[in-house]
Length: 81
Image (cartoon, one colour):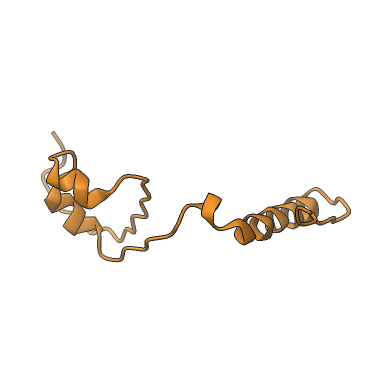
């Protein structure tokens, strides 16, 4: 059931999908009203596989981050020849 009184909340929702939402709405697979409630800001990014330069940047970021947390000597990945 739920509570009988209102409570104020401050929440942010971050959602990601590989589905074409506009097509899903048109096909009845996604609720249009829900899309307009959560779709305040939309970012359309190409898949990581199409952004080859970003892969090395992300890999080096995580390598440095986890090397520091594990007190290991930091090394870097080299670009593919």
